[in-house]
Image (cartoon, rainbow, N blue to C red):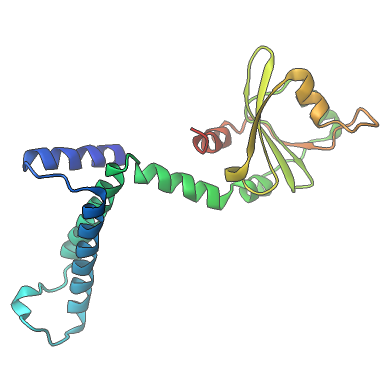
Length: 202
């Protein structure tokens, strides 16, 4: 199920059952309660002697999945109460932690100096440049007289976003003493990477 549809379904569930929506703090406490029910069901797999055993249902995959679902629902409700989409936040965090830099490096072609110079004069969204796989530049957008880029020495989640004129873009990556560039073209057309990195800045 799409996460947006899931969030919408939770909203409809509250309306259908005419439930009072808990505050973020209350929803998180309910989540802790649901976590306890998940633990309770896992404990029932190991045949512990329990007080009031009739109140402790036996473990089933469906039952355990439903308890996990209740836990997830309350976490979503808590996050919604603070005006955030936890799925979008999780996606952004994973992208930030993963960085994407290593994946870009592994699939790099590493173009020649001449090809790099040609690309610099005709930048396209999705162009990726690097200086010895330590410093990275991603062209995010190009219009009539501006080039928007991301620069990073760590991972894309920590990249700096800049908008430059064409002249500033070209001059920024040139050696001061020659016409060569200190970065080398590694990819063209990585619009998928542009989309992923741009999400971190929306």
